[in-house]
Image (cartoon, rainbow, N blue to C red):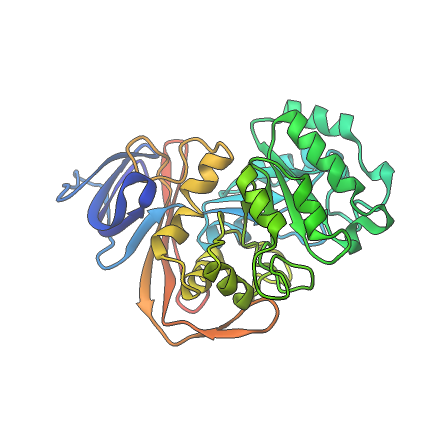
Length: 380
């Protein structure tokens, strides 16, 4: 459709001054035309009644695995539009050797907007253990790929975990950090099982780099044995390093995040790490992860900002993540409803939610056309 009107929604986009104020949004030719109250529909225009619902910019999930040929991968629309997220970043599933296949056969053919964090390993996540040998890193090939496809590749990715780097330890992460800095691209680093030590990884990172899985419950994490934030994390944040939830299958602890909040060390970004092993639980979708983060004490408005305007601005995704005239017309329409749902983190700990976000409709635009995806109750 070329035009539609969203009526009576509770608008949430803090960067644009919207904190659950009731309003209407007029969409024309895939862009937001006007935001106001008592806007009138034109003849023949699709009208969406969002009364009682939260209306946000389309969600941006900075951590997914949507290259199906990678060992964790699923189709982009399975992890994107179908789960209430209009824009997703693939976090290192492809490298210089296979990015073109990923782009031609998946990125360019799906409805979900997909951007890429190119793996520092040339093979990406096709086999795993992708950084355990020097010959798996080809920086000239990476540079060539980035130069050719800079419209889509918005950063680099490396996994700092014992099962990935093998005997090379910290060396691949040091190469990734130096390369990202030289090329002017943010590096996302997966932090997991020692070695290398989180403290050593953090010391390599600089402004605009991102630590994903920042609040995992594994040994040697972001908290000291006394429950305080490690000094290296505080120093990294002072340098401009950002910290992402990155829930994943084994990488988010409700207790760790709650303790970090109590210490004043909130997350900067909220990604899911959705892939084949967790998309049917415990992660499900970005709205479900937001519900957990909100349940830990994060204000709704802050949570929304961390998966809309914050990632859009960080990764230079022009026109996305905001409710403002001229922005691309991507939206989530959700209920924020009372509940007594028991949810789990990725290590089996549970909490009872008092409220949760329930996806109702996702509106997404490509070019001048907009479409509405209806979410089925019980399948989210």
